[in-house]
Image (cartoon, rainbow, N blue to C red; front, side, top):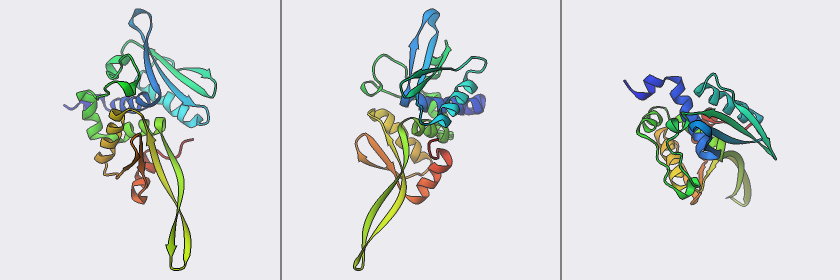
Length: 200
């Protein structure tokens, strides 16, 4: 029986939280080996705050998700002894200065259902933007507008995880900068619109 089958919808939610954790989250140890999962959310996007809180509650039911206000952002905090079991990527130090590798069971779930993982990554460190360019058509310069998704992260490992998950669903991407990924083809943007959508 696969890990995805055993965990069901909860397993997919775990990977959604993992995407949020890799972007804007951290684990910190408290007394009696209890860990606090903290995910920082921009106050400009109350929809993301509500969605992230719901996902955390699904993964860790019966425990409250605390909202701690800070200038311009809300920290979602959940206490549990087992957060390090679900996120073995936890370790001292900044994520971009240490290896970030998915555990075998996490890789299995991402391989079968990469969408929740991508959603968490893009809600943390991604954006949907409108861009424009110009083309010479005959004697005229015409302006064209198009939508694209951007994902930025200083960790090359996290960037590779995002690239790999996009490859699994045949979404083409390119790297305009070493720390930035772009998805701009119309059909690829439509796929991410279904999975992620505009931030609210």
